[in-house]
Image (cartoon, each protein chain N blue to C red):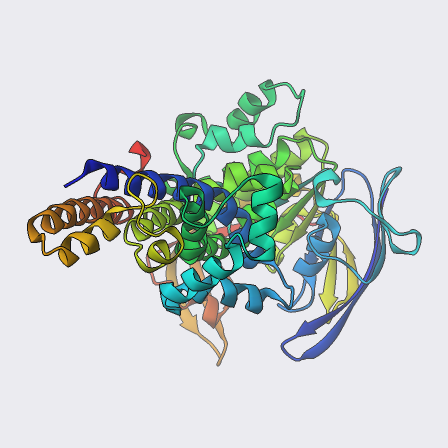
Length: 223
Length: 280
């Protein structure tokens, strides 16, 4: 077993989760409170990764960002980013792929906040941003935690998208799930088992902690 | 002087309803709005606060204009200096009592008002508790204190006591009167409890289907009113809806008529509040 693949997996999951938190809060806020008619369309788009085979997403990302395509060529030439077969590409794809897992719980949390709490803050002269940071986000802490953990765990479990857009480059794009596939192909079941056990243990512990905290078994104020 | 003129088409359960009110409130006056549910009381309060946009209207608070639709003036909620007390309190559950009050402090405002308010509503012992640990009456006292921190020009109360029991309600009414007088507030109360309105308001407006039906000047000052706690001796049903209640107060017995439905949960031996108004 190479620790490199596992390290890469967790690095990918951590960076993806961090980016997801930053972009999901405004998206979820907008979705929860907008009266715009395009809301269902955006909701559908964000939820697509839930039902779409990951290979479909990976395939289109591969086409769109390949250096021979217009966008891919432009990105490489002017910004110097190559999204295909690179770690940056993996992060980008993971963010899209795990977006619904982060947005949905946060959006649900926002819609459950009693109106009077939000209005009370406005009436006390506080701006929308202050209200969001000091009243709303603390209120939805359990939803945020659920989103963060689901986003993180789901990224760890990625396979199809990663394989399509990242390939299998050791140290760069070869994450644990791909390493497992590799080892099985080479009939090296022992190594595959080691990777699998680590992933199983880590994801089990993460989810267990969330259920314990959100279920009130561990005191929430210790967060 | 506060001028309030508001118009708005609302979709109610019984179809469309037009809210159309025009009234003036003197500074330091205590006004009550009452009427059947769906009459538009809360909507009027929300329009004054800026939480609901009227179709047309004027809101002038002294020299300040908060709303003037013909001149396209519409000051944001945050900039209208009001205190608003919600029926379900609207306390921030992640903050303690003191933190809830601190949150309301404006930039460069002295902090001593927090201590002063905590004293007035007698929450000193509970100031480090989170709202979830408090009773309904205590939560509403926090909400009231929090609404005053900013020293608002106008205090708006949206059925603030309707979720509380009779005893708690009477106590909270006293706090409301105290705060109203202490901070020279102009207060508008939405309520459906006539007793409450009599006790607190100088003027009351009866609303029906979005319009003011009746204006009542209430000349009873709280000084002319007193409350007793008595014990029910007997409830005698007299009619389909009416009953006679015999109550013992001290060594005396009194007889009062009441609505049968109001006495449904009462039985002999229960404590009951009786208020008396001195009419001169």
